[in-house]
Image (cartoon, rainbow, N blue to C red; front, side, top):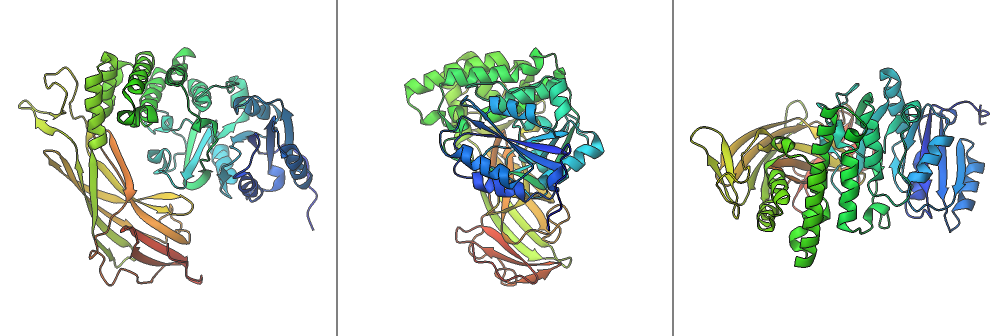
Length: 511
């Protein structure tokens, strides 16, 4: 028998903007009803942005079946900003969590983020975001929990989406609102307002909270005019300055946003475009650099990005092409050296990676290093110093192939510089009963992956396994470890994976 629901102020309101939802909406709803918080401690605020299908009837049925649901209908605005603002206005919770209509929340997401906010008096809790079929968003942010973060040192400026928990009074007291109408990067605009108000931020990395699922038809996937796009980007990047926020936070945001900007198709695929389109994109991107990326921050940018910025400021297409070639032609060849079980029950993985870049390393007689880039003058016109931010880095991770949850693995690295790059040796111990921040890995197929970077070029990939690398006492054998059984194996794609199942569970199908 169901206990009568007592109508009181909920702890948290989940605000969901909707417009003709199709793929993914049912899965979102299922994840909302599966939350570990009791029904009377959270509510869901659906705001229908002028749907033209059967959405109003579907929402009415949901509201009849779930008493912790609000439904609001508004004329179509075409973008999520207005329905989110309407949702915040109607929300009754102490906190607000923003979700898109086609993503998912993990079962304990609301309970854990609210608990972290309560014990730290947080204005914002950044819960771990995962993504299936693509790299984990903001990976450097998810290596550890941070109860109260330093806005600069702890890297929270990396995350500019709004799929987070916010204290509702913080949003209202600082008049933080989404831009309404067809505005690109509305998340960036809101987070600029948030950071300008010097929020108290916590990071929950030890539990996956939000599963980001990209579908065709999202506003973010629609094509745009480069000048328009970069205009929105510059406005969002300058917002902390405009609002009088902390200068050091503004600088950190600009550095993080610049790194994200250089992954956009306008830049990442520039070499593949027609000459006419290249010229249009270069002009628009260069104007964005002038407007939003000050040269005084170049010392904090890695070499590839530094070269791109300097070429754009000069409107030097030949130099820009040379740096784009440097980025595009860089590659990394990785291979498993050995995998073995330790006496402690961990899987010891040793791998090597050779990272290769066009050009060559030059050691200056008076100390320091620089990179000689083909096509760029080697006379000091461009700042091609190899700085600390350019040094090779690497770590091993494990990632659930189906769900997308990724966990860091303690990794030791040794770097041997080479004339055209570097060789990195990584040694890591995968501990299946404790790999998820002290919890066992969930049943399923877990790919062993590498996260690598050098000179501002990053590589994220599954670890390759040569045919004869896995020892016979490791490959394909079922090993009871703690509460789980683990089977390392070489996949059909020639990479390393481990199959995990509970000690009493039936075997999973091969992946």
